[in-house]
Image (cartoon, rainbow, N blue to C red; front, side, top):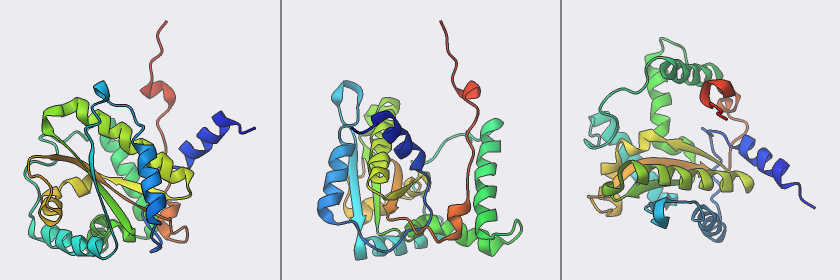
Length: 225
């Protein structure tokens, strides 16, 4: 009989931010199965406010070209991002630690501006993934809706991991959701929280050596009673 706690722990720990993918596409039937699993995620009042657009193949490469052009032109979505920088104090330290781990693994020098820019642009090349998804919601749902989409996306990422696939959740893809809306005909009134690149991981890529740590449990969880 399957040891469910051990199986879940294995799946949860195997999920990581993959930044290099093989070109092999996920079969459509399996894609639909995984997104059905994601749809079992909880949401406030069962509203299920997520509106997901999944892009694959040549269409994804076309959007990639548009995104790269928008990034270079500074054509960001004015409604995306934070009004204030949330990365201060310990949060800034963790962010820097993640960047350092990736740069060291991929050989990007601290003062190599060209290599750092190319590393940044890989976000908009979806790390060569064959698929990407954007998560939209009606903006009236606000913080509650964003929490719902977070639970939905995590369920999706765990379902991908359970099926031998990898993913990378990317706030960067939400910063240019105006481009995606234009290209896919998405309702302009919808808010984009973030995007997700996914597919079969390329385990031979240097980025796989970028290991981020996790804060001690006591720093994040406070038990009472």
